[in-house]
Image (cartoon, rainbow, N blue to C red; front, side, top):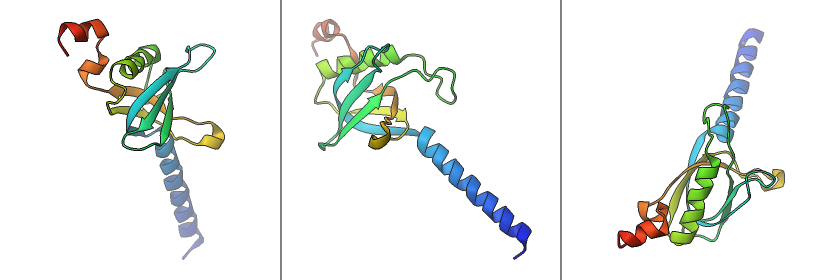
Length: 136
C-alpha cells in the first residue's frame, strides 16, 4: 500500500467519524415521553421541558431554546412550544407524547437535547374551556 493510499484512507476515516459526530449532535430524533413539568422564563432562566420516558422511570429533560437562523432547524417559537408543553402537563399528564428534537443528553457537560415540536393528541393541546365545550 502506498503512502498516498494510506493518506486517502486516513482522510476518509476522519471524514466519516466527523460526519457521524455531527449527525449525533444535530441529527433529528424523537422521544416518546410523558411531560411532567416545565420551567424557565426564557430570559434569565432557559426554558426546560421535564419528562419521563414513556413506560419507564427514566427522566429526560429537554432545553427549549430558539435556534435562530442556525441551519437546519431555524427555530423561532420556543415560547409557543413551552406553552404547548405546559398545557399538556395540565390536561394530559399521563398521556405519552412524541417530542421531536436534536442533540444529546450528556449530564457531565450539562447538555440537553433541544425540543423542536411536540406531537400530542388534540385534546391535550386545547385550552381547558375548549375541551369542556366539546365534551372531551
